[in-house]
Each structure stands twice: as C-alpha cells, then as structure tokens.
Length: 353
Image (cartoon, rainbow, N blue to C red; front, side, top):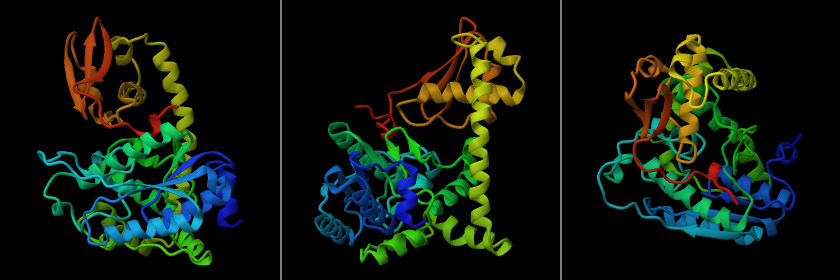
C-alpha cells in the first residue's frame, strides 16, 4: 500500500471534506498538502503558513509556500505574528500541551531562531504554537472542516520518548492521537523517510530548517542523540516504541471504562470520602480524569498522579494548586477542580462550528 492509499484508508482526509493544512514548507507539511489536494480535492483545501520573522530564511520559506500553493491550486493564508514584549514566559517545553503544536510534539518546522535565547523571552515554541493554532482555529471556524498537521510516526516516537523523560504518568506514553477534535494527523502512520520519498516522486521541493539540528531544542536532542543510542541497542527500537504505544492506547479504553464507573458511583461532584476508598491506582486515574475535564477548552491539565496523595489529604475548605492554573478544592465534602486564573489560548481540538 503506497502513502496515498494508506492515508486515504485512515479516513482523516475525505473527499469534499474541508481541511486547513498547517504548512511550514518542510517535507512533512508539503507531503500532507499534496495528499490533501489529491484526496479532498483542491477546492476543499486551504493552507496556513505562519511567518514569525525570526530567521533570515523566513521570507524565503513564505515565498516557497506561496509558490507551492499556486502550483497545487490551493488558497494560502499567511499570518505574520510578532511576539509582544513582556515578562519571560515561565513555561518549558514540557508544559506545551500535547497535540497542539508546542514543545517536543509539534515545534514549528521552520521560521524559528537557532535557540530560544534568540528572542530573549520565555518559551518560543509555546508562543509559536499559540499563534499558529489560534490563527488556524479562527480560519476553520469560518470555513468549517478540520485542521491537519503533518506529524509523522517519527514525531510520535520522539514525543513518547521525550514525555517519558519529562512528564510523569501514563499519559506520557499514549503519544499523539490521530484525531483530537478538529485536529487531525493523517501522517502518524508514516515516517519522515516516506514523506521525503513522496515529495521526491511528485517533484515537490521542500525547505530545510537548520535549527532542526540545534541542540538547544529538546526535540533535536531526542532525534540526534537519544534515538541513535536506542538503535545501537536494538535496530527495531522505533518500531517497538510504536507497537507498545498501540497496545497502551488499546488498553486505555478499558481503563477509561473503569474510571467512568468509579466516578459515577462517587457522586457529582465526587465525594472526597468515596475517592479515598478507591484503590490507589484507580484513584490516580479518577483524579486525572477530573482534572482533565476541568481543563477542557483551555489546554490539557497537568499530570497530577504523583500529587494524588496531596489532593486526597485536603480537608474541608482546603485547596491545592496542581499546575497550569488548575486548582483542587474541597467544598461540602466534594472534590472540585477549577481554574485559578483566566483560560489559555483556544485549542484546535476544541473548535466548534
């Protein structure tokens, strides 16, 4: 089965289904745009390119995307966000929400400086993610359809390995979903080598970003240092990570059903006393579900399994900040999670028509 057939079989891109492709100009997004045109039809495809103006090559990247879209007959939307002056953003790469283009799983393929220090302010990748997906949400709400990102199986492996090291909890091992609301990732079953081969066979040029080799970014250290070390231990290291990921995702549906049952029996809001009676592992999963539900619409909740004992130990009227603006509180014997400050930027998986 060739790449076109494989992507078509996922159903993530469908004939006449509107789709907005996030186009950086790199091999993966160029491949994705071509596949979207061939599957959905060019009249139903648009592209979004964000020129952050942070690298000397940013202008050439934008021109390349414009030429490509003209060749493929696709409407191109260009945004040129400029990062506002302000205090340092305290977030790290690990804080970037999964599946939304920040941190390890989705840093921009192009238009970023060689290191975060080049801007002198905070987490560049998180800001770029917010600007890119904020623009994508606005466009898709006006035109309908999905937002397509060019994350590949190679990105998936890097994401899982990075999260394993940086984020406690089983969610770190579940990787990126092929569909997350409006956001789709049609290339998750394909490698970078396959997207490059597709572009070459189709005569489609792509742009290379020199910062993809800069050790300042965690993604690059995983790609250029950790993965070669794992391959030296076993040549099928990446394939084994992906097989394990598939098994964990399958088993997650079983765990989710058990959590549903436990929370249904604990009341609404769940009684703290009932949560204390749950086995420790199930209690952790239940608390994470409550945090995830509370955070819906403003980015993912932090992994809080390692803080389950602190949450359960709260007394009546007590409160605990668990991270990313989320707070656990006990009111009238019930456990509630809520925001301790205003909501974050919109996420593509929360966009609604």
